[in-house]
Image (cartoon, rainbow, N blue to C red; front, top):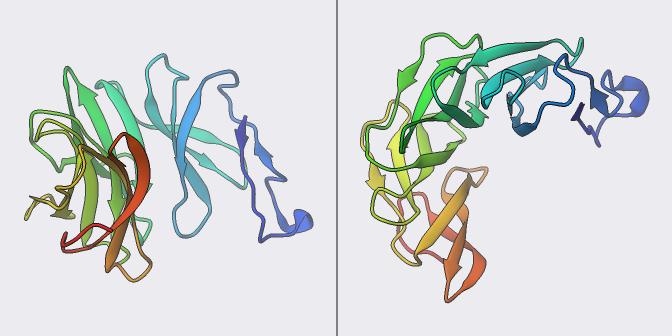
Length: 196
């Protein structure tokens, strides 16, 4: 089962009533993400043996296979307009970012580097992506246009920076940073100048 909680919606209005039953019960499911319309959830499921992307329609509970079969899929994130998913796909030792439409078509590779690229997050206007990459030797944050152009590193303090999230205005990025052996929350401006 996929647990779904709608705290802002009354139970009588909630078609899910807390849980959605999906056809592949017992399979591990991870990393859910909502599109803006709230009609579906994208997530990673091991229903077919490997971690693949699935989408479940919240009204009906119907689940459908979206992307997989080419290594490990992870970290799905809907664009602000809900029309595109970004996710990481691992093949061999590398993990790169890809985008596809809501039907799993029109796949496009966004990153092309040796290393692990993961944890993508869309800017509120949908024009940029921030993500984690270890291409420099340890996990750091990188910023790029949504088509993968203009890529640049934006964190330099700490040896482990991960799990970025945009502010609602798109002017700052919060993330988890390991400094001095402790995990902390840090904030940098979206141009990558100055962590806090």
